[in-house]
Image (cartoon, rainbow, N blue to C red; front, side, top):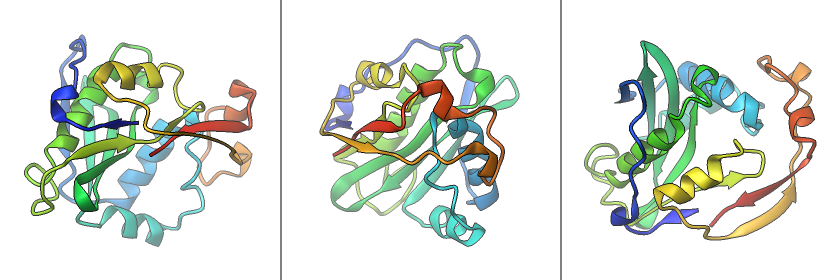
Amino acid sequence: MEMLDAADLRPAPLPGVEMTFTLAGVPSADVSRALYAMVGARVCWTDRFPWTHADWRAWVERPELSTWLVMAEGTIAGFFELEAQPGGDTEIHLVGLTPAFVGRGYGGYLVEQCARRAWQRGVLWARGSGPASRVWLRTSTLDHPNAMANYRRRGFKVAAETTADKLVPDPRIAPWPLPHDPRAASGRYQEEELIT
């Protein structure tokens, strides 16, 4: 999905509590790995399971990547990753809420604030990378059931679609425990991914 102009970004209703968004000033493989597991376990984020600590460090310590921590009610409520890419493209790699905040009406505001910061590339983060000319993300049918509608309500449009099989590992052999087997919840072993 993509957004080609910052003016296309549509605001979400304010959440019932104050949410703060902080750029991680010190990239941390440990924090990013923990957030990836905490937020992504329910929606089959498994692609980074094989990553070593060195892989995580190499990923998060790049100057073009920014990690944002989301707090609400004194608790980590979610996070997102943004990457400044060549030609003005800015990719939202990950965006999501921690389990305690899912289903409480905070997702729209999270995506709005994530997209706002993506458009502020070169000024707020990734200084010197130039302005964003396009903000894009990938999502799939394995994502939260409301994710696609949320992205559309914020102003994102489908750029391309593909269907492919995705191997979802047995959660008993994952590098960290999953709260349940995500394969059983979806009943699917195939994902439709929306990409550019």
